[in-house]
Structures are given as structure tokens and as C-alpha cells.
Image (cartoon, rainbow, N blue to C red; front, side):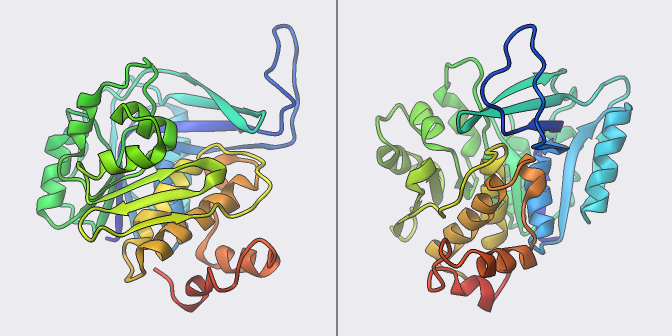
Length: 314
């Protein structure tokens, strides 16, 4: 197995192209709509579409939405044997409303009633894994690392606003952490993405901070190599799931012998294509779709920058 994703599963419904936040008493229509499995499933979908053999480990309920998501994931070519059913629990639903160049999220439901360590197959040996980590998931990360897996950590948004720094203890043993600039600065108590990147390098061998229109910063703590790549120029239609697509694509790129710059460029390209379409991470490109997009957008895609995408693949 190339890629395993472990964490919280949702059903995502995505409304993009809105003129603004809906106001009480009004109904707003948009043709820019999509749906699909969300949360940790976003990384699984992009991994499978980019050609990696992919499996998911998550809790599902015995409700129709859980069955719908499981069927969708299976049709994406993802191994769903790691889904564990919690009787009486209903899969949470997240509505994403896209306006003013960003999105707002509302989630209905409750978190999964079983911990990640309870559901993960103890014998699974993926080459890379993306795991929803916190300071309670050491029993998930460490066995994977001990079996030779490179673990990409996903910490998620802190709705409390506290950004408890002890959560970073969950990065112990992980290979990479890929927050956006706001998350990185909040967790590290720093005042710039660059300083946050350096602070995170004390926790993981590969720290990566996405900085929106400014591109991406990455630092390999072992070699000292640092890169700052430019964002791929696109007209952003829907930014829902862009970070998840980036992480999933970066994990797949780590299966290659590409340089650090090429791996980050590959992930940035996949995320840029996704945000140029309505529907969130459900519109992530396939491996062939990357090349097709490069052919169709020569002005946005420097041939020299992305020649490696054409020449070789994960």
C-alpha cells in the first residue's frame, strides 16, 4: 500500500460562487455546488486520483450518509476495509459557504465515538500516512513510524481559539506537518510564516507552511534545504479543501525521488487546479488531469517549472 489516511470522516456539501454571506430570511441559489466525503477522505481521494494505492481508516455510522460516503470512496478506488462502524452514530455533515475569496464552515453532528488507536489495523504497513493527530494519538503514530511509514500530520482548526501548544506533542515521530500560515503562527506563537516554519522544524523533519497567494514555504530540517515557491496563478472559484488536497498530493510526491522543490510544486499544482473549480476537494485532478491542465493553461504553467510532471510520475 502506498498511502493510508487515518482520521475523522465527514460528508461535505459545498456551495461556492456566493456574492456574500446569506442573510436571515433569504434563500440564495448557486450553480457552483458539489458534495462528497470530506475531512480525512479528501486526502484519500487526491492520493488515489494521483495514482497511489490508497486506503482509509475512519469511523462510520450505520446511517445512510455513512453508506453513501463509503460507496463513493470505493468507487474512487480506495480500500475501505479500514472503515469501522459505530452503531447509533451518524456521520457529521459540513456545509461550506464560499464567498469573498474564502469559505465559512458549519458542521452538524458529533465527533467519532471511537479513538483512532481503536480502529487502526495494527498490521497495516503503508509507505506514507496522513493522520489527524493531537496529543492523544501517539499510539497511532509511533507504531506506523516503527514500521517504516512516513507520517504527514494533520492537526486541523482549533475552534476554541486557544491554539494549545501542547497539541504539537502529537507531532512526535511524524515526518511532516503542513499548516497554513495562520495556523502555523498560532501554534508556534510567532509573528511571521518564516519564523513559524523554523519553529516547526524543531518538531518534524519536513515543515511546510502555505501562505496563500504568496505560495508555499518548506524547510527540510535534516539537510537544511529551504524553498519558497510561487503560487500557481489561477482564478480561485472555491478554496474549500485546498489545504487537504495540498497535503494529500505532497504525501504522494514523497513516494518519488523528486527534489524538495519539485514535490512542493507538484502539491501546489494539484491544489491550484482544485481551487479553480467549484466543489471543493471532490474536484481534485487525476494524474492525467495534471498534464491536461498544463497543456490547456500554458500562460499559467511555466514549462520549465513543471517539466518533471510530464517526465515522471508517482
